[in-house]
Length: 399
Image (tube, rainbow, N blue to C red; front, side, top):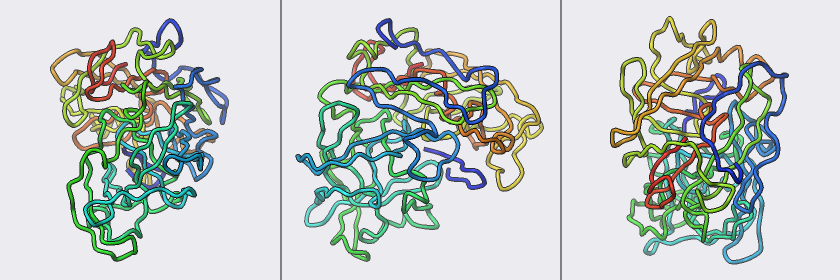
């Protein structure tokens, strides 16, 4: 997950689902919503990019949101929580304690209470206890899984989850969402876990190894069916952007009539969930990440893609929209495919009433982050590691 906020760096149907696409052409009305009703099915979750499901906290450009129902384990004492960031770049469900009203069951580690520190690619972090919850995705059956309750006041946070080593996300207003639904390529998050002597602030916490059953799990992988991956399906937007966009998160790949792949290519990844992107004659490790709100990559030149003036220097501000292409290659050396994309002037976009942009980009040192703009106008398949579909055995991206 990597997101740049304005001025602040934070870092289909029965015939099958096609993967080709991209941002739409032409211009649209300022503030307009793009996209219609989500795909039908019990395995479908609505996604709104800067739309109604993002309404709980201040929003930032290109923020994809879903709703998740979380219950006290094994009960019908449930709470539906909106404003959950959809993130293909992480694994597991994380909820801020301020957004949670139902009681969950604390998981123990030896004689202590289990907690986790997770660091994200934008330099931010989350700390908090790991607790058992019943989770409902769409209209699928409830699954009982470990989740992280983000709470910086639980025990003594690891120094990896405190300043200056990271920027802790401590509340929904600060993060601009109530939690994160990580539906990336891996089943377990393999994070940094700690055993704490107590829940009270200041209680000692020490690193610990935990079994897979106590680790955060990709909630999709825990489903009784529709558990081999997901499809992120979002509409394209006009060149001047849109106020919001409506799409779908479809659970499972080839498990129902509404998630059958068609005309897509699968790209295998390495143990870091990366394939490669060749751009401007150079090869970079790359990944697909709905939690990143732009395309982040090394600028070919300061003349072609200058940085925006402060406080938006993390973004590109070319005088006119620029067209590029790059070649993506699977981790095993094949297949390869060319992707065309646009980069526009970020500040010009920010000065409109729109919030969803297909050509928003910024600089990165030596990697290529295909963030939310890449997903606009596409059906992107996320194949979970070890799970099979007609596209192969995960982990893979397909589009």
